[in-house]
Every structure is written in C-alpha cells, then in structure tokens.
Length: 275
Image (tube, rainbow, N blue to C red):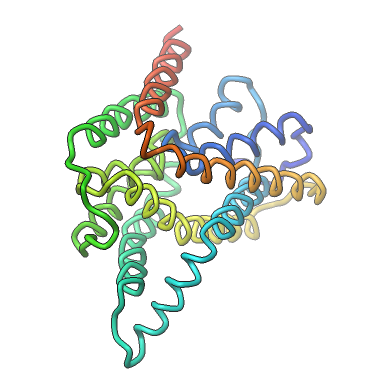
C-alpha cells in the first residue's frame, strides 16, 4: 500500500481519482475496485494513505450533509432509547444500523491486511464485478420488493450486515452488496437504497479512522494541503450529486444499468488481463 505520496499525483490524477471516489462510493459499482484500476491499467503510482483518507472524508461529508436530518433524528432517538423512554421506530432503525455494522467491522480488522496483500488484483476485480452484478440483477428481479424500513427485523439487519462484510473484497461494492441483500430480504428499492446509504456512515467513519491510524504509523512524504483540500471538496461535491440523483432515479430505472456496466467492465478487465 502506498504511503504519504501525494506529491507524485498531478492535478489531472488527483481530479480523476477524487471524481472516481465520489461517483463510485455510493453507486453499486465498487469504489475500491475503481481506485485500484488507474495504478494497474495506467501504471500510476499508488495514491497513498493520505489521499485515501482525504477522499473518504469528502464522501463522508457528502453523506452527512445529505442525510443530516435523518442522522440527527436517528441519533437523538437512539440516545433517548438508552433512557426510560424506551424504543421508537427511529431508535429501532438506529439499533439495526449498529448491529449491521458489526460483521464488516470484525472482518475488516481480521482480514484487511490479507486483502491488501492478495486480493487487489485485476482478475479479482473482474470476477467480483461480474459475479456480484449477476447477484444484483437476480435480487432486483427475483424478489417481491414490497417491504419498507418499518418492516426491518433483527434478522434482516444482520443478513445485510454480513453481506456488507463481503465488500472488503475489491470489486464487490459495499453499496451494491448491501442493496442486493436488502432486495433479497424483500425491501423495496427505495428502502434498500436508503438503508445502504445510512449504513455507510459508521463504516466510512471506521474506515477513515483505521486509515488514519495506518497513516500515523507509516512514513509520510510531503503533504500538499491545497491538493488534499481540493480532493476532499471535489469528492464531496460529486458524491452528494450521485446520492441525490441515484435516490431520484432508482425507483424508476432499477439496477439494470449498473448490472450492465459491471458486466462490461469485468469483461474488459478480463480481456486486458489475458491479453
């Protein structure tokens, strides 16, 4: 994994990587897979931990801003549930989000180094892109999709949480696999998407903290604060825009365009690898 090598990135590279992070973090097409591709296909230097932390901060800012009302209500209800007031609909949803975060957190702590060493490869990204595209298509067309967030259960939350743990494998897509699991549990598209986005808050915070700890413990190169601020801002703007339009369109267009994109991407990567 690269370290503090922000100086090796020029303006075009910083812009492309920040845009890639902003677009792919919340769409079901895998941000980790796309951020690896420039270094593999274009022979770019790895962007490094500093840059990874910066663009994760950007997408987290976008998420917090877009869902600020939901997050404020959920957090307030969760705090209240710890007292004598008991559970409400919002506090129950907050507990579901906490429970669903645990599997990915445990798996990430145990296997992150192994994945970094062995799974960040072109054939892995290609295979996961195609396999999980097929699963997303099946879930979107094979389930009843008639339940809302009010119908969530502890079992459903845990199933989505275990599915999220698979996103540690590059090319899987955290949002894609959690939406797939939610659809297989018969949540409608809007509810599946909203739960996936809200579930991203704790996992992106945890990922950012882990990367920050790695950064503190690693040798650091020169840091361009203006470049980092630009990367954070650009990834935040792009991510906010993606969230907004994705929520507007998903109930009408479904997941088929993303399935097609993933299959085409995976097939092209396989051609590149075997050629």
